[in-house]
Image (cartoon, rainbow, N blue to C red; front, side):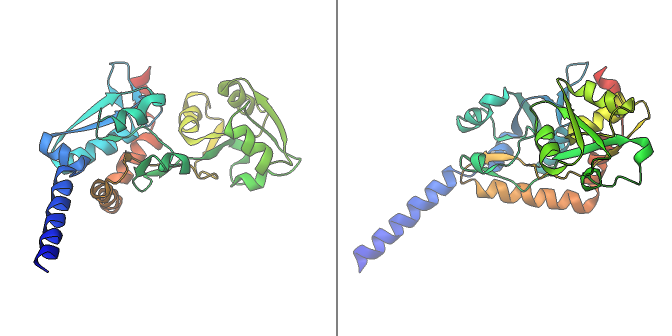
Length: 265
């Protein structure tokens, strides 16, 4: 019995030592005084480099609020997207905050927070159709002409979900959007981050942005497998900012205002 108790106590001590040694990314960041986040700053308006060389964006502001809640500084580690998961797994930074879609394939390699936004496909429609077209379903008749970029999710969605409409694809996004601006097409199908910029930059007052995504592409923060303490902290942080108005303020700054575009020119 004594031998059994000794083994049990030794096992408990070993487990405690392991847990202490692997406290998690958030605990490590607090001890260090800096939260290190890996990102590829090329994804408007989530993380991008402005004309002064600063990394700005919606996700950047969320991370700044997170670092502030922890009482630490935010350090953004610029990393190519194709190497961002290996960089996390080799301790180059604490977490990934780079507009990453939570997919089953990635979830086999990483743990993810709850999504902080769902982007998906959205619509830019001719201003004359405001009120008539309220969702992609309203476009699914032979009366409408739709467009997107060749080879993209937007094109696949157009052909699958809006198959009855007349479709024409373009080599680049701007040509397709201008088809709608010039009245040659009724709607442009593409991902929300691009459309939120295009409606103001290319639209010339002739487009309406239907901003509710109709495909499910959740974006979340990525951490090493097994770091449940950090996931718990981040999820609770996301709940808090949704309730206290911080999330809405940051969201509206990047998705409903165009002031930030001045920093990009």
